Image (cartoon, rainbow, N blue to C red; front, top):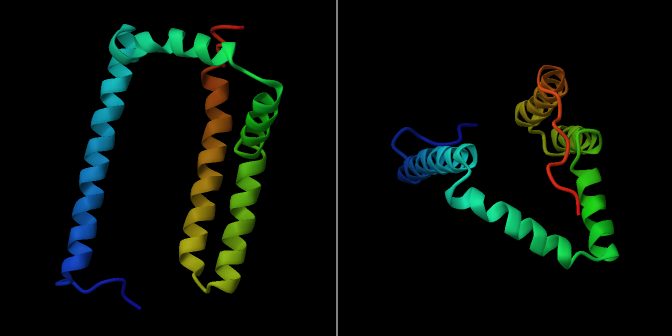
Length: 128
């Protein structure tokens, strides 16, 4: 089954919107990267916002955010994605899409664990 016909106007608009979002995302990324490297503009807000958030921190919020971080971390999230991709492939009959998702997760997890050897974690910059 084909996703769209060559002359399908809706598909053309979707691809155009996707391309514009990619260009916008790259532009925002470059702008934030520049601000962080030069420690100006938006990066100047980092320290005051961090201090304000630390001043209103509660044990409940810490527990909730710790749970979210654990689930979205490099150990649990790949397992969740691989199980989801397997279910998607078996139930949804979308084998190549599920394989693509699982493969991307495996490659990104492997790259992340490998890159930690190249660039060690500098540790926290600030402690409350």
